[in-house]
Length: 330
Image 1 (cartoon, rainbow, N blue to C red):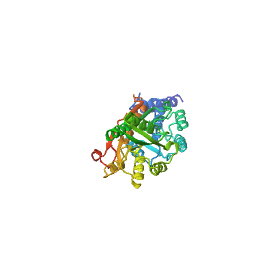
Image 2 (cartoon, rainbow, N blue to C red):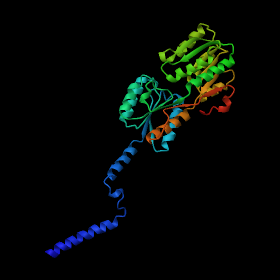
Image 3 (cartoon, one colour):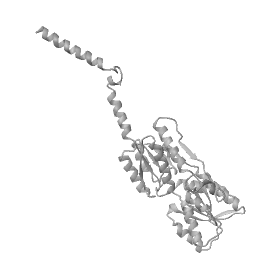
Image 4 (spheres, rainbow, N blue to C red):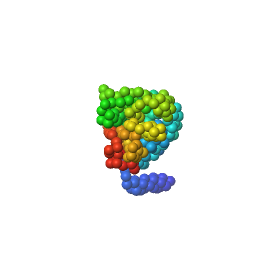
């Protein structure tokens, strides 16, 4: 009986020694109970590879190009982008962002339709611990976003106004097409008005698209009332091109129209002979998109980042449009 017990003990010792001999990484994480916890962390990171993108309207080429720039940058690191288009509907944007939270996005690139109405979505994102990179149009409650990446909108508007002063040194009558609900538009118009101040210019009409004023009706009223105008300053290129189209169809001449964006279509129009479009405050959605991704990655990695960054803006007009080309954005 004793011999049988000793034999069993000896066999057990041999088995344990054999197992120890076969294990090459003694003392490594293989032997550590923490290993399971580390694997779960890695899985969590892999599962959270989706970021959200919500802008004013993805049908606007400016925001479409910005989206593409962000996608290119994040794909290099294996991330994907969940895109939702509110179509300039502030309430829908809030609803779509709540959907993004439910779908598990790890961060959101956001350009608000309405800088104030977006607050419920921002509060929900903050409560969920999801960082927000605010792009292009700054939200009102900046404490609810990690960083704002946009264009120097005041300078873009200023460049248009400065060009107008040079074109019409004796001043003139101006129409402004703005949007009181969009901070980017407000800053552009502010910069423009600063440039033309004390230079003999009078703003004879303001069309506020944020107050649901109709652009076509506003321009047609000016035309039908035979109000003599010398220039029209618009909040962006799409509006400027629509104004140009309305004025040209009505046979209006000798009016200088300005926009902001530096879009390919605007540059094409600038190069047309006798076009009423005089200039555009150019910005770069590509650079903004790249900077937004870099900022987010710095936040995720615990590195220093800028809480506000403004991309340079400059004027593209009839004189230099050819240099920038019409095939894409600068």
